[in-house]
Every structure is written in structure tokens, then in C-alpha cells.
Image (cartoon, one colour):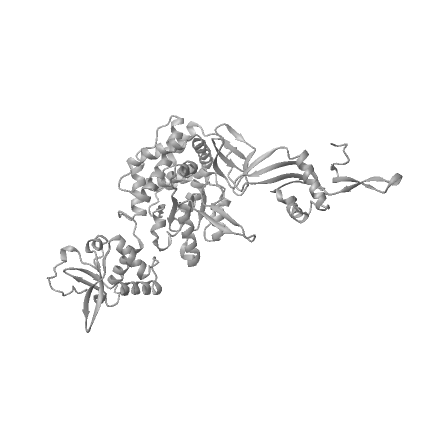
Length: 570
């Protein structure tokens, strides 16, 4: 009400109010300016993930600058908080607490008539039974763009202005997209990235997303793939690709809880990090696979929950530290080398770099496919591809299914444009997992198995001490003094170093017993010189299956007689 002198008003100098000075005939109305800026517009904000209100103000400073401020509703609680909210020399508030309350009421009554929903981070989310892709500029759905629903600019993904991909562009892209590396590597990378876009469907189906780890020597092309293949498909700004070694553990947890869009990391090199950070990274990656919620306290003594939900891509020169089975089995690992890179791979990569806009369009088109993919349809895809995967189980099988789903989602886009589909991909994905994740074994080695393998190598390298007193191979079994073996392993790791974090005696015996390697604890008494020593009985067949032939000879040379004489080590 521009004529109401009991309301706040604004003019070219700022926001003001009328007060009456003097009494009787000497009384006069005087303008008291509370600010040196004008209010252009205001919007009520609902922070959906945090479940509280905020406000967005568009202000015009005395210098003519248009400044946008976004904050929580509590900024109007006291003058100090409000001044901090303004946060620039161009904007000033000169009123007291009561006048700040009047300003809040005035803004709410005349300006904050519209509301926007703000989400934490870029994400796929369901709203009113409709799946949306929420970005900083608005929410994309199958019905169009809604500018009243946005993310809070913690991440930066620009897809709304990208033009649709044409049939000819998609056809040409399909000819190159799987040729920047060998088929097992290229298909594993592309499949993992596309399936990561279906993070909402995957979570609702109560499935788990694996990590993508790309490892290779310097110059093998891993960073080129990250910057010119993965990032363009995700429309991921290169400036937001972070170095995993430079990020703090808490910042990593915070970033992984901001939305559910994939996150890219470069320079993964555990050997250059201290052991505390390595342990923290391992813990975070394990929790991320399970989408765990981490609680942290703040200075107000209130706890804050961080829901880890962003798929990750790691690129570096080294694999996981200590060959941790839990992380290896939770990942799709792709190894690259300069020697394996062919002229076809180089030529394809040059084409991809020159046509990066086509990858941007592909990513935009895949998001449209995801937005029209129901959870039931996603599960049908998973159930259909699982029969094509042979020789895998447990987590490696889940990794293979995820990757195959990504290729099938790509096929859905090809179907829309009536193009030929990608076929016979499951074999390449399975081969990569068997080679790089399982090491051509049925399963990744546990810590117990790694320790036994290490001790076998120590014997072969003549680094083990008094082997004939530690290991006793007899006709009636294989007996090991476990405590001494573990002591030597620990000393070896401490002095020489090894990519393993040894278990303690109690944990080793417990896990070795559960896995079948240790059959009976302290059941065999053998005389050594003038004293008797208790040994543990191990399973010969399982040790032979691990090819620990320096601990237990192959069956074809097991020629000992019925006596108690041991087989000497050469």
C-alpha cells in the first residue's frame, strides 16, 4: 500500500518508514531509512531435504548492482545475523531488532508470494509420483521443465539447454563410443556410467551400485578417458573433478551426501597418503556401497546425518590399498596400459574429443530415458541380463548386472531411434571382472588368504626364518605354528613392506577356522629338540588350491612314509 504511512516503503535511497517527531502543531512526519538498498523481489524457499524454510531476496544496491541472497528464515532473528546474511559492503541495514521484524513482515506480506523448493545437490527424485532430475536451473521431467524446483548450487550440471540428439548423430556416436579402449574395458566403463544415472531406480529396487576404478600407469590414457568420455556423458564440469588425495575425510562425506548424481575423482594414489587417511577412505567407500547414513555432531551439540548416495568414479595409478577384498569386490576395476593402446584406440579418442558435443547430447538423451524408466522396468532389465552372466556370484555378479543394465539402457535409446542394438556385451563385462576383480580365481582373496600367500612367497624368497620349525608337513597332515608365522609376516611387512594389512593372531585363527583353512587349533604336539610345541592343523587341499607349494608340496610329490619324519625344505 503505497499510501499507507504505517507500512514500510522504498524509494531510490532505500527502504524507509515514517515516524512522527514533536507534539501537537509542531508534530511532523520524518522518513527514517532502514537500508541503503531496494527490494526487487522475494521468494519463500522450502529446503526439502533439511525440512526447514528459507528466503531468497533480489536486491538493488545504491550503486545499481543487482544482488541475489539466499538463506534460512532465521536470518531475520537478529540484526547481526541479518547483516552477515547481506555479506557485502554494498548492502547495509541500519535498523534495530523491532525494525528488522517489521521488514520481515513487510517482505512476507507484499513480496514473498511465490515459493520454490530447493534440494540439496543435483539429484533424481520423485515428486507427486513423478520422477524428476533436479538441477540448479530447474527440474526436468517427462512433462518438461519446472523452474520452481531447483538444487542449491552445491554441484553444477548443465543439461537443460542441450539440444536432443538426432538419429544420425547417435548412429555415428555408436560407431565410436566403444572403441576408445579394448571392448572389455570400454563396455565396462560406459555400462557403469550409464547405470549410475539410474541411481533412483537402483535404490528403490533395493540394489547397490558398484564403484568404478580406472587404474593405469602414467600416460595410459586414464585421465583422458575421465575428462573426454566420462565427464562429457555426465555433462560434468571439468573444474569439479576433484583430487581424492587433497580432499579431507569430512569434505568427502559431505560431498557424497549432496544429491545422488555421480561424482568423479582423479589422482587416486593411496601410497602417497598417510595410513589414517587411507583407513578413512576405505571406510567411506565401504559405507557408500551400502548407502549408509553417517551422523556427525556440530558445535551446537546437535547431530547431523549424512546419507551417502552418490556413485563414484576413481581414477589413479594404484588400486585399493592392502588389496582390500571388501573394496575390490564392490568395484568394477579397469586396468589400462600404454602397451595395449592401439592406433584404433587413439584415432577413436581423437574423434571423441573433436565431437564432445555429441557425448553431451547422449548424456541428455539418457537422462530422458531414465526419467521414463519405472522401477519395475529397471528390475525387468536386471532379471533379463542376469541369465547371460556366467561364472560370477555375490558382489562381482551384482557389478556385472549393473554394468549390463547400463548397456541395456543405452539400447533403449537406440530403440527409440530405430537403430541396431549393442549385443554380446555380457561376455566382455564378465571377462573384465574375472581378470581384474577376481584375478582369474573364483573369488577375491581374503586377508587370511593374502597372509598365507605372503608367507609362501617369503619361503620362496628365503625371507622366512626357521621354516622347518614353523611348518611341519607329515603324512597325516600339515601343521603350522600360527603365532610364529604371523610374527614373521608382521615383521616382514614392517621392514620390507607389502600390500597387506595383517590380522592379529586371534582374528586370523577365527577367520581361518571359519573359512576352512585352519581345521583344528593347537591339537598337534611335536617335539623340537628338548621341548614339545603345539601346532595347528591346516587343510592341505585348500592350501594346494591356493598353490602354496612352498608350504604344502603338490600332491604328486607327497611321498612321505607313515612315520613322523617331516619333509625338509630345500
